[in-house]
Amino acid sequence: MTTLAQEFFDANNSSHISHGCQASILVPLHVWRPPAARIYKINVDGALKTGDSVRGVGVVVRNENGEFMAACGRRLQGSYEARQTEFMAAIEGLCFAIDMGFTDAILEMDTQVCIQSILSTEECNGVDGLMIEEVKSLLNNFRAVGCQWTPRCGNKVAHALAQFIIHCNEFVTWIEDVPIWLLPVLEADVLSLKC
Image (cartoon, rainbow, N blue to C red; front, side):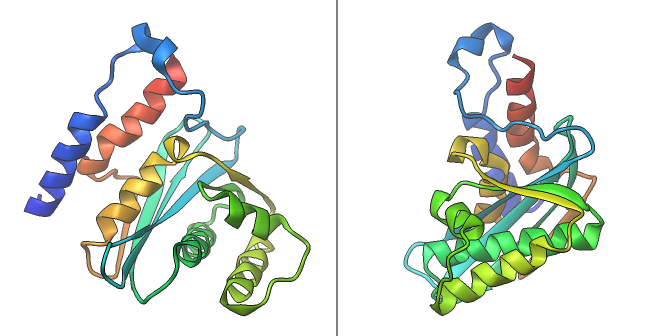
């Protein structure tokens, strides 16, 4: 494991300690929730590197049992606004899910304004409008699809991926095998389901 990956693993491991079901009263109301049977949930998030033009987008796909199916991340270079980075994460997530063959899915992200824009029937101009139209076009490739908002605490895995990818080169994927530094974040989500 690289030094950077080890540091990320250590930082996340210490901040995501499981307290078991005894502490279920302390579980936040908004945690990651699995999709219905035979549906995959695509969680996406964008991250910005402060004082730099580096952006990262993270994507994780999980099934109805919370099992890790696949993930990817892409490092972006450019002065995109936070909202535009979130739209790029949605585009990346939908393209990835299509390429992986997940035809029944829910796109979930932690930016309400982006979800509202995607679901809106009103036209939007400018760069945001082009990105929204691309998201809507990609949604047409699914047999069944939904879009929904979750607070950040329900989107921790995608957020961790987006933060991590800022320090990587361009594009990284993981299929069925979870990167070790991401395990504590995934396990915390699954443990919250059992409580």
